[in-house]
Length: 103
Length: 218
Image (tube, rainbow over all chains, first blue to last red; front, top):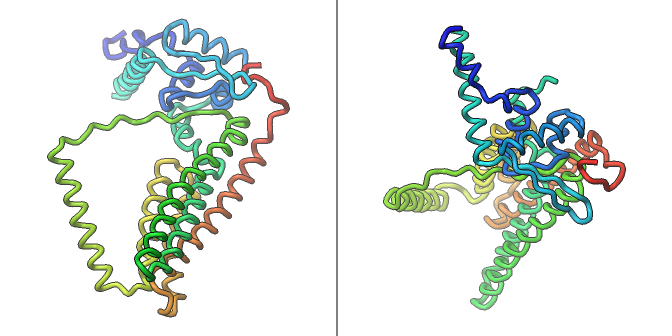
């Protein structure tokens, strides 16, 4: 494998999964999003989304806050500083890979 | 699952505008402005009367603005967030200007404003003044349209400008500046409220109410 293409093998495997990269893309554009919004935008089932969010939380990329809106439980998700940095690096690596592959 | 990352982030930016509350916000603000300008028609009386009108105008704009903000937030929480979820937008951090540049910008804006005001006062007939708020609103709406990719804002921008021209054309020259501008804002508030109602109706049709008050994860 040439060094130009090697960049893809270095990407963060926690992010390099379609569902999780989309979750992070959405969260990178907002301050905070609730579970319902993420579910609608990603098209994932509640169970799947819950699993992916837990993995991202374990990795320190997402902060999950359980709160209430009136009497209704509400799950708020936000990107941590570490998560934002990791996602920025991931995007740069992908762009570099695409650029190298096309050249 | 095929969701493009760029599409997801673009939709995030447009989410605040999907339910028509932006038009309601602008429409109600335009209505407050209209009442404010109609109040100014009365401000040719005594000093005390002028002061009272100035004070009531201030109370109207500040109190009305706060009331509109609360109303829109209640509408968002009761309608939008329950149906399609909640997000709060990220505040983009911009580099602050150095103080000397900031002073220069304020000075230039002040000079430009004074020149524009003098030009409007001396060379533009008062009946054509509603075209200027129309132009400003049209530019703001076009910027919103570009940022959010919502096509209806391009139509709204055209209406903003055309409404100003329409008020200027139908004015027989007897109305005066305040009535002219008040009429423009009344017309715009009607347009915005109708547009907001239509957008909200479309949004509610696509996104029916959730079956019961349940947790978002259940």
